[in-house]
Structure formats: structure tokens, C-alpha cells
Length: 190
Image (cartoon, rainbow, N blue to C red; front, top):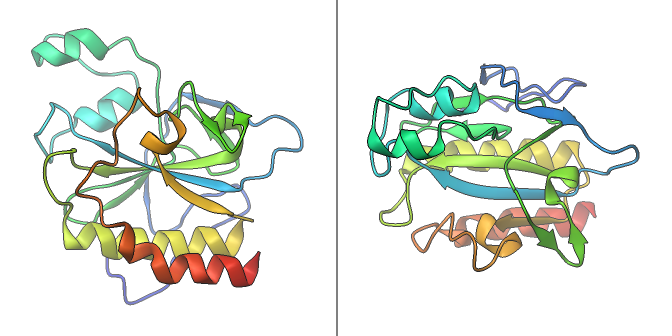
């Protein structure tokens, strides 16, 4: 996806430039929920392997438990995320932003439980053990810029921030400094 153009979003929260793959793993946000948080994750299926169909299959409940030993442990999970950014920068969307994706699990941010109610989840194809690709940061920056301009986002955090002790992603190789300018923009808009 060329990033020389701005991304666009519709009233349902679908990004026109993303490949939309509908996940059944979502529901309605509670009435009056303001989307004010973005949660950054990492995912690779099988663990440490990139480019295959595992992530899409997991988020669409089609993961074959016999395709990999790890899949036998997780194939019954019913999870999703709003977005996935692949290693090559390809942007996929599984749940419209206006709906509640099931990405955060048991979570809390600034005293509020159930972060799925008020957050957007972004998965980066990767792991805790190696750096993310430059193409991923390029797309992530464009996506964050769009989301911050469209929703009253107050914080951008890692999964580890909302589920400490339970989750470690996006991991020690995630470059939080690339968000510095965006956080300044959030302060101006907030």
C-alpha cells in the first residue's frame, strides 16, 4: 500500500485503503462508549513465522488445529483485532472501528476495566524477539494519524500496559519514539 496518500475512514470505521476480512469475533460497544484508546499488539502464527494465513485464520475462526502444534492449543479462541499490519506493510482490517473487537482480554487502563469497550486494537505482525519492519512503522504512522484525527484518542499503549504480567507485547523491540510527534498532535487536539 503506497503511503504517499492519506488514509480515509467511513462512518462505520472502515479504512478504504485496508483489505477488509470480516471477523465474526466482535460485538457492539456499550452505549455511550467513547473510543479514546489505541492498543498496539504483536502477533505471529505460527510463533516467530511471518507471511502465512494463520493470523487471518485465527481471527475468522478457521485455524486448522492440525496445521501446527501451537494451533491445537489456540484454535478454539474467539479473538480479533481491528487492524493487522503485515511485515511488508500490507494493512488488513477485521472489525470496523465502531464495533468492539476482542483483542484486549482482561484489561484495565487508568482505572477503567474492559479496554475492548473503548479501544481500537492494532496488531503488528511480529514478536517480542526482533525489530519490526520499516514498512510497518510507515503504515502504522499513517493509520494512527487517521485514527487520532477521527476519534478522541487520548492514549496509545501496548497490550503489556493494559494487561501487565499477562501480556508482553508489542515487546522490547517496538520503537515508541516514532509516536512522539503523534502524541504532541493528540495534546493539541485533545
